[in-house]
View 1: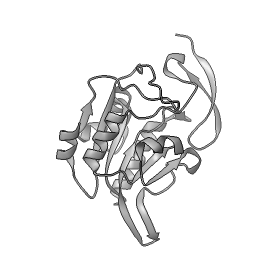
View 2: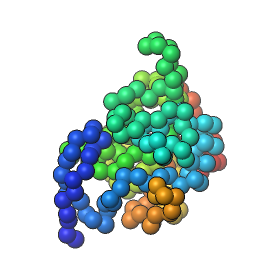
View 3: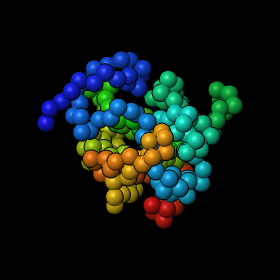
Length: 196
């Protein structure tokens, strides 16, 4: 299949050129999570404190108390629920639907996965729901400290049709997706099992 060179801004705000299969790329990074996944996420977590890979428009749907936009670079910031001062913070209930693409030769979803694992290890995350393309993440996280397969996973029966900024439903993606539950200071795996 032919490829085309795309010029895009990566998560760190650096203009980069990359080879992409046109069938697996889009002109927009703005693909919003379907309502049924957000409802199941809220049923699992009780509430969403932080979305570290969002936008102002996307958060109108996610309704996280705090969210990081691309310019914030959620990969470089701590994932607390709230920070009173440098010594007082609350672990966050995190929802993450990371953007696709790569930074250099690293998968951006894998970078967000590894950031989540490090934030859990640091005690910054109460628990998290992570939405991703299933086969890609099952493969790429094998070299991570923990794979998505080390956690409860919901393999979605149908490919989720993400929403566009204008509210219309996009075409079905070319890859299957899954939702991963990651416990941190709390473990609501049973709620995840019921919700998803």
